Image 1: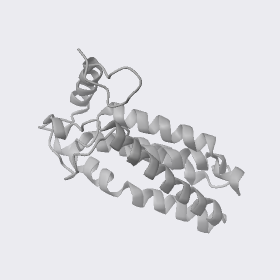
Image 2: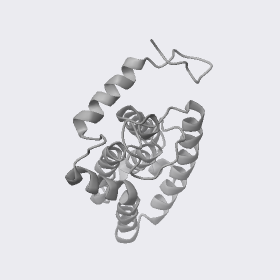
Image 3: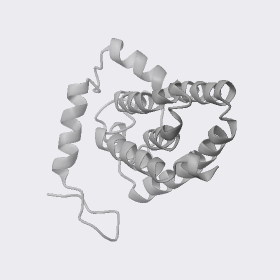
Length: 184
């Protein structure tokens, strides 16, 4: 069986795909009885990873003189965020908590969650600033922060693993297509 496709093109998403998502969520512990030792750090990261990214980018701007590149990458990330939210609204794929699979730990709205905007934007920043890692090695941390934030959003019940994986791939791919160094 499969659910109807929200798109006028392409095959519908098979239910087995969401079954694999749910199986992975159970393995990650992102369930109704999620252990506190996983849930508490995940909630902190899901809410505050933007500050980690801002600190890394501010350091690159101030210490390594990359202010224009960091500003441009943040402006582009804003455009990526808007596009990603439009795509998620169009696809309107339900979030795990909206299906009753786990609690809504973040008090998130029930709007569509595919792809994860957090994962997309953070991976975009990692991809577009990647060429600058040779100048500001701390920028390397943007990739792990994007991945950790994706895990945190799964733990918090805001996303399925596929939402995060699609967001990471989409964001990083866009970032590689638009390296900030070519625009300066």
